[in-house]
Length: 348
Image 1 (cartoon, rainbow, N blue to C red):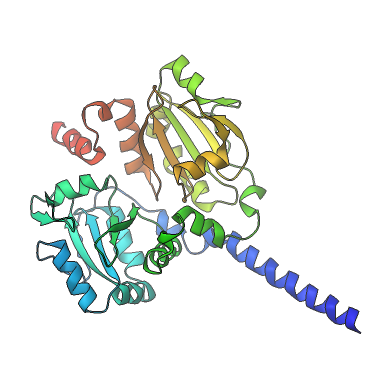
Image 2: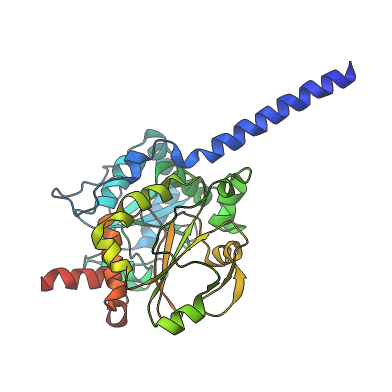
């Protein structure tokens, strides 16, 4: 009888763990088509921020004190821009969800800033900036970007770009519950995953990806071309959408001809020599780079220096802009992608 009871309990446990693993494996597929597959060209209508956003008094330290007095844990500074399709998605899909709104309002006040504004602001370290300068200081290349300040006024976490709601919820908990004190966001997300489902399925095979072995230093030195490294994973719906949509457009494919492109599964032990000449594995390199989102596209110059990365949701308009920024050498004269992009619009 004891043996039978143990067998039943063991079977129940296996079923429970199997269901958890299956649920985790399908996380990327849960209601995200409409959340990430959208037209990312500039909007026609201006964006309206939620009414519960706070207006800064001009001193972030004072804004933080107001939040703490109201029982909050800290302050979030939101960097956006008018008619930004990614900002619109954040406001509608993430901030528009009742549970997310409740969680943020319980733990934080949000201050909105425009990355093009010349309005002056004093950061929590008492240094003066314009909103534009502060966005550059925090490397908010892609809007929307969120900077999380703890109760002591220290910026402790940056979320750059738009992420689907399930990952945004994880980021909020990571910051609000103080997990940043003991582990990286990548480690936090990895710990929450169960099983090896990211390794089970193959990646999207494309003709423009260079075949192994991956000696990226030798490749860039030989060709003198910039390099694009696509960090992906198996069972990745967001990766599938990247390849079926923005990376499948004729203009993007034409730009890719000017690059060396390789694809790595960010959870495997695939040998790779980095552009800087370090022998490692795809998994260890992704960890060293702090990657937590798949797909992540990282661009390197011919000397092996990182130019820019896209580590959040990306659609055609933004992807094409980054490809041109890299191929045209825009980073050589303008290290800020948004500034370069604005200059390109003005010259047209």
